[in-house]
Amino acid sequence: MKTLHLEPLTRVEGHGRVELVLEGGELLEARVALLEAPRLFEGLLLGRSFAEVPALVCRICAICSSVHRVTAAAALEDALGVEVPAAAWRVRDLLLVGGHIESHALHLFCLVLPDLAGVPSVLELLREDHPAARGGLALKALGNRIQEVAGGRAIHPVNVEVGGVLRLPERSVLEGLRDDLAAWEARLPSVLEPFGDPAGYPPSSPVVGVGLCVKASAEVLLRGETLALADGREVPVEGYHGLLSEQPSSYSNAKRAGEVLLTGALARQGREGLADSWPGGIHANNAAQTLELAWALERARRLVDALLDADPAAPLAGAVRPGAGVGTAAIEAPRGLLIHHYAIDDLGRVAVADIVTPTAVNQGAMEGQLLADLKGVDDEEELRARAERIVRAYDPCISCAVHVLNVGGCKPGG
Image (tube, rainbow, N blue to C red):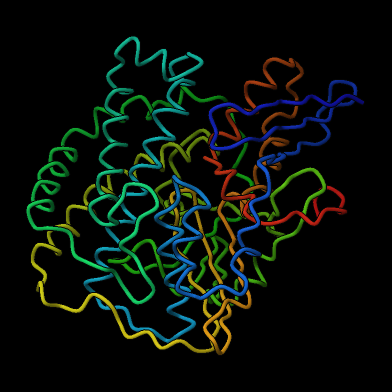
């Protein structure tokens, strides 16, 4: 028996490795080990005032800081019975959409595009002045700018607090952003052209895992009160424990969800039937992200228009009355479903904190996809190259996935 160690995984967020167990040239087992040091955020929150939580949890990850802050605030508002004004949610939604643009652009143009171009790094493409690479970085910068406008900072936003937001963006800033968004809507198709050719991706088995996403409304596509699965099941957000109970792993510093589920752009788009014609198995997640970029630009422009039309005297925060309560919020992060759950005691201190991240949800699917796609491949170099591309297609965020303490002592798989 032989184990191939693919370490480090390149062009993913954070540190990880893939272990492929072979016997007689046949692949028997695939493991994805997320090696970033445990972050202990859930323990850090215990005993702290609820008001401190949003600013702390957004430090779990710089790329995902906006969605962590908004999701934490929403869960605490659920616990405390706070009604958030519509104007505040428009600002928050703009912040979330900016995060999607930034994150998808980073993944597609810096991490995936080099595979399609046959080079080891986006730096090679930038040296050649590759138009898609240059355009992708400009698109990522636009996502950062949107987050700065809505959140006060491009990374670790400060404008979101429990109850709402602190201020509306300045009118002149919104007007300039609206013009840039309209220009990008026209420019986007040419920038995304490299990702549409199925020939650029390796062969892939059917996607492993049951699709999971928030059941959202037509106007609010990233958040909702119900979790929807591709097999027709629906679970209230507050009942997520029965579906997503995290289990420690002996070979990874991240916990994983029990059932094999798939979350992210492909799961979101697949629910609408948009993914049916895409070849490439899990690599279609890249194509799904391109569709979401087009949606995000249009959605951002509409939100900017709504903020420009908003009453400047409208309330931006609801009344917050500290007390005991339990709350849960689910929001679609760029990489998939993100859940924050908190219990608050009578003094407004955190008694329970639970955060479920997309990469923790996807770890079982990643391992199953590796096993399915690489069966029959006997060349070690091909195994290494294709394994990296499979993991990369999930756009894992390892910093987010290792936010908890690994208690250890379990056999692989639970």
